[in-house]
Image (cartoon, rainbow, N blue to C red; front, side, top):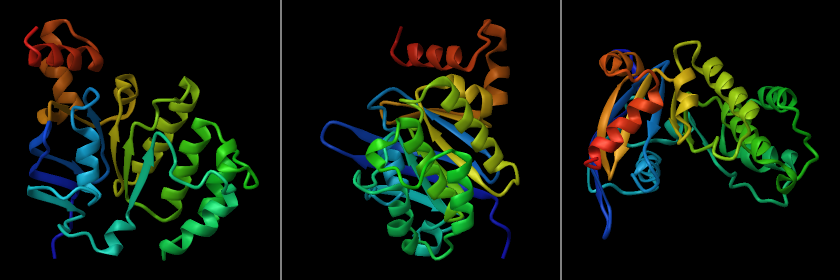
Length: 244
């Protein structure tokens, strides 16, 4: 069997709602890469992510994760989710999070979880309700890494983080993909973070993909326009799409 070189691929994914539709979404993330997924509120980022996770049944198209179209439990275990707010019970302590979450993951690595919790300076005795937004994000990341996830999906995790916490998270993501086997889909409004760490950028607007390209190609294509930042390029595409 040939080696799977793509962590995630969407082919022609569509989902119709009453007032919104995902329209023929296609992009792929190679192993070892970080893809920035950008777009305004309501553009379709979260719906796309929910489709990848099987939380939304798409009308058409194909989604494969590590070459598998229908995700068996062994593939689901390889996906780690980090959002802007944890879904853990607020009355749980950090120790409780491990106690209640770890049984769902046969490959749970307790020593790795403890290592990240110590590294992130999170007390196991603290309740989830007592954690700052940055600590909640780091706790979700520790859980994802402790169950040996190979694909991290981040849905606006830096929205409430201060610059130092955002920088720390970005460094963690670079470390995560360094071995060439792990990959990241990073949905965010903060394009400056993607400027530092992304390999690819996918821009979605009104449920359609405007472009999905390597950051290097995107910057090269726009160098003649005197636009020197990724944020400037995306803003220009957005204005063009809106007819301005």
